[in-house]
Image (tube, rainbow, N blue to C red; front, side, top):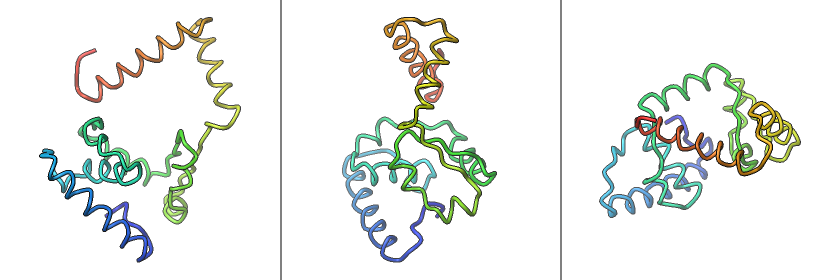
Length: 149
C-alpha cells in the first residue's frame, strides 16, 4: 500500500483505525468498492479528520489517483493549504521522490497572489471577487462530478 505507515506502532494504530472506519461505513449502507484507490484516499481523509461525511462529499475523476501517483513519482511540487498537511507528509517518502512541499497559508505570498488575481480580473470590490471564486469552485466541482457547466 502506498500510504502505509513506516513504523510498526504507526501501522498498528492506523490498521485499527481503518478497521473501525470500514465497520462504521459498512453499517451505513455505503456503496463503495473498499479495494479501490479512491476508497484508500477517502478512508485516509476520514481517518485524519474523524469526519465520516467525507464519504459523501469527495468526488474523484476516474484518473485522479493514478495521475497523482504519477506526479508524485515524477518529483512534482506539492502545494497544501494547511500547515498540518505539510507536517504530515512523510519526510523519507518526500525525499525519496524528490518532492518539495509548499504551504503559503501563513506567508505573505498568498496575499501577493490574491492581489495579482484581483488585479488581473479587474475586480475592485470584495463581493465581485467572492462571486468569482464561488463560481470557480462550483465549476471545478461540476467538472469533477462529470456534470456540464
